[in-house]
Length: 120
Ligand SMILES: [Zn+2]
Image (cartoon, rainbow, N blue to C red; front, side, top):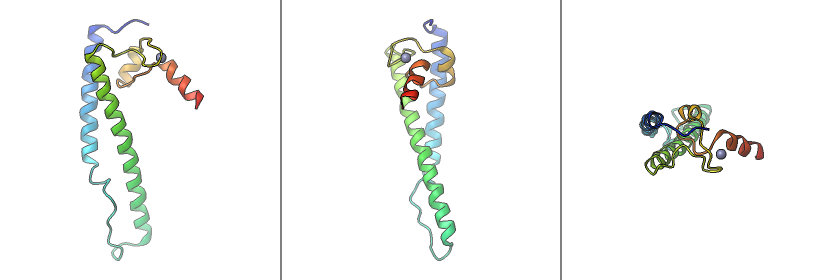
């Protein structure tokens, strides 16, 4: 696989920064929804209370995923600064540009990813 060109790196850096901003905004916006459910038991029924708790669990799971993705994005930007970006952390091969454009925070290549997934 070819190494990334300067132009491709620049494109990916822009993608990473946009992703970081987007994730930070989403995480900030969902902050209130993730707060513990404090509902007036008298005002609403038991069913809607259960609904609210399930809803909150979903929001929390999403936020966890987003925070993880945000930290991967920041790590990718750091790797870019030290010139280590675009290499698989597992096998040291270059990661395909197309994969990076789709998921710029990727730290491992496609074949390592599928190897990890089939091992599970
Ligand atoms: Zn790999």
